[in-house]
Image (cartoon, rainbow, N blue to C red; front, side, top):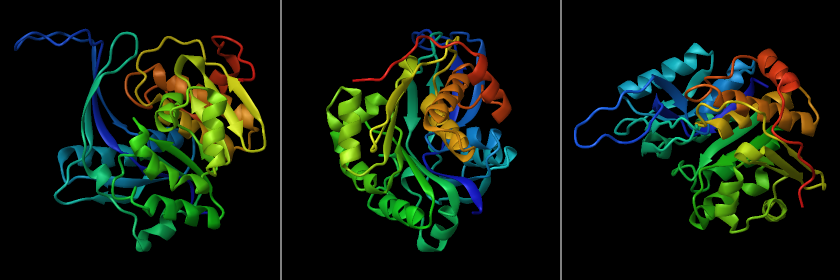
Length: 320
């Protein structure tokens, strides 16, 4: 196949500051220690993190004809990500965020929706987009034109061509479920946070959420759980938990998206399911050690060494 990883969906320009304490009164100023820029979003973070770890990556999404779009494309290209499927959409704006990161790693943000909702993979682009070992969609719920059936068509075509398909979402309520549900029958690995999964189903338990999505067609669920690690549950009955690594968190922006990239890298390396999830968890943990998406991710070798030698917070067992 032409690519290892095709990352489709939400690309955003982020400006991040650390540490954020409070909004100054009136026109006042608070001083911070760090300020940086990053390509983020469920597809953008994953694209760069995967490329850093050696995958041949195609970026698929939209940006506006603006300075932020210029920078997003430049940044992707600097990591040898193929941007030939990124669309410059006239009349739109690059999706952008101002991220105020607290000392504990949490990050309240201001976000401007933009070209993520406007791009569309038409038939002339489809063959290139699905020509990958792993085809990933990140950000259903924000990809408004694609959410109207095209994401499902794309994933169905990817599976027919022999790709492995992965999915992450931007979900805040059951109102997002119809856009997600149409894609589920064509998804091998569904990888939302447990909070996103619960927002869609109304369930709170790990196993209950996994059963819901497996019953709707996915091959396996891999739920990210923040400081509690990750949970794997597949249609064949395998299930396990992987603990979080014991790290000093700087910024949690993009951790779930970096997890998705790590999963794809480990899958392409032929790792078994548990090692694959552990490697994905290591990628997420490294992401959290820097300011801005992908900042702590350096290379495949660095992530593998981190996975092997970094202690975890607790030993997890099989979830009920």
